[in-house]
Length: 262
Image (cartoon, rainbow, N blue to C red):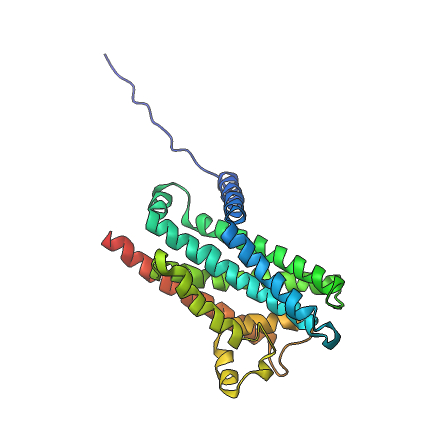
């Protein structure tokens, strides 16, 4: 009896399939961040609380206009470092990262969903700070400035996502919060998130331009016309782009070595 060979054609997965996966992953990632109270309350609550303490009390000095963009930067950097850096470090320690690696979902979608979650939190932070600034801080802001600031903050999440990925591969999960704070807090202070860099000690003024957070702050402050005089917005973007490539390259090398040793 002759048997007929049946050729099984592989299923071709189109862009729509991956788009649905990405949308679901991004949605679940945002819900995870929102339900993690230690994360959501601190990342959203800290900029809001500090603005109420320093922006509203110094409204007569116009300090609130500075703090809206600078605290927006603080929010997005903390969202990336803690929301992505700590999350991936914990998933790596719990073995969940290995499950994700074994799944058919492309790695870029896994990381992209986390970026979208942090970007969503960043938009929430910008919206709350603008609302507080207009209603309580004596800040005058136009819709165009809000859109420009939101765009800078969302784009600024990319380099710090890359940084968070590198941190997640290097930092043990149990000591992650402490180490990330040791990175995040000095960078925030030296970059002008808390006060204009011109009021910082001279030695910090020398260090500040070497920090990626400084360039993000200058881009955000530039939307309100408060950036340091003489700086180039294009130059700030170029430095952040180079920083992103450096972090991604280092993360890729470390991740490849970890896979080879596994």
